[in-house]
Length: 120
Image 1 (cartoon, rainbow, N blue to C red):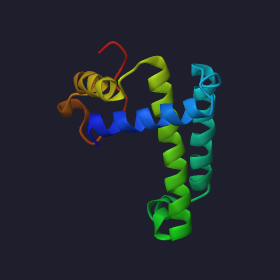
Image 2 (tube, rainbow, N blue to C red; image 1 turned 90 degrees about the vertical axis):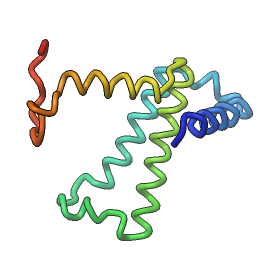
Image 3 (cartoon, one colour; image 1 turned 135 degrees about the vertical axis):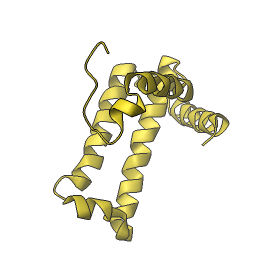
Image 4 (cartoon, rainbow, N blue to C red; image 1 turned 180 degrees about the vertical axis):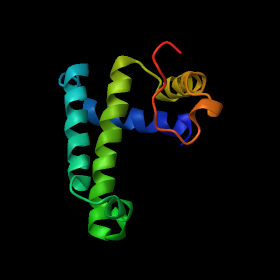
């Protein structure tokens, strides 16, 4: 998704909230709590699945729709939170990826889930 497409969705979410006078409720704290709640609903779908079942979770159209809905809720709240805080998520992610590339160089991180020691 391009930054322009993401901005259009952000604008649509802001307009949706503004039309309903929900901006007063969309404080950073409330949006974070709503985001956590939606992540919890997404996690609930996967909670008791085996790794193989989780890999095939979207094979069932009804479950796939549920996963899509929860992912959309998570994404929507994440975009609203970033918007309210004035954070450009694309830029933030690019900066974080650069930082992670330095923190986890390929020659020391390839094939390992081990976290780098702090301060390295």
